[in-house]
Length: 129
Image (cartoon, rainbow, N blue to C red; front, top):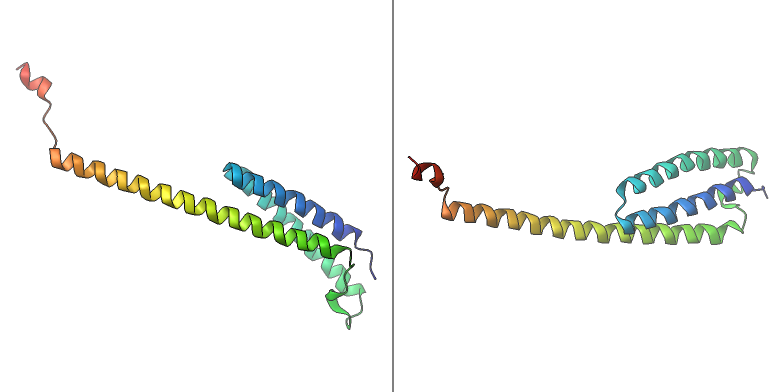
């Protein structure tokens, strides 16, 4: 079995970024969220590179399923954190959509009120002429 300590450290960093990503979603810190996702994109490149190295030195008959059993709990935790963040983001999106619909309705109502009452001429200027 290969030593996956490099992969473990990358996955641990992924977990840290995923936890920070969840915090950014909860706080509505979209810049922070983008930063965490950029960090995860870099990690994904490193993980893919490392997996490629594992594939070249491992037995092709075994394949990539021959990972250190110690990684399984970490991978399960990462999947759970990613699912939680997905759900948080979906809930925030729904909240923002509802707020946007409310603002659009308010805009329509104000426009209708303006039309109903019409634009009054500038009465101040007319009273002094």
